[in-house]
Image 1: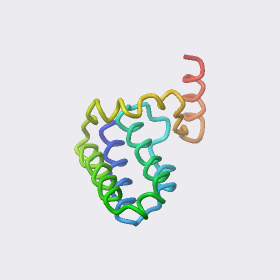
Image 2 (image 1 turned 120 degrees about the vertical axis):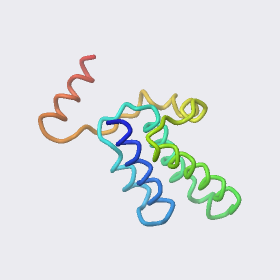
Image 3 (image 1 turned 30 degrees about the vertical axis):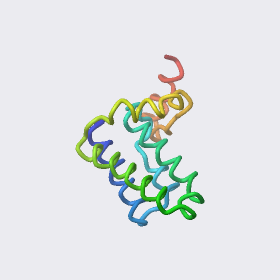
Image 4 (image 1 turned 90 degrees about the vertical axis):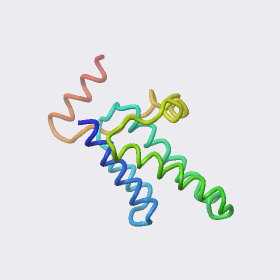
Length: 118
C-alpha cells in the first residue's frame, strides 16, 4: 500500500507545483493514517512550501530551488521508492507530532484506537 500512497503524494505535489491545487487542499488529501516516513517527510516539505510563500514571491531564485526540491521528492515518490535518508532526517523531528487523520468509519476508529493503545 505504501508504494501506491507514495504515488498519490507525488501527484498531489505535482498538482501544487503546476498551480492546479492549493497546498492546503493537497495536504488534506494525503493518505489517512499513514506512518511511512517518506510520506511524512513529503507532507512536511509541503507545509514548509506553504509557509514560505511570501519568500518565494520576493526571491525567484529561492522559488526555483524550492520548486526543484519538491519536484525531486515527487519524482522519487512517483517511482514508489523511499526518499533519501537525508530528506527524511530533515523532517523526522516533526513525525511524532504528525497525525495524519485516519479513515472515516469503524475501520478508521479502530486504527486510531490501536495507535492510542500502542
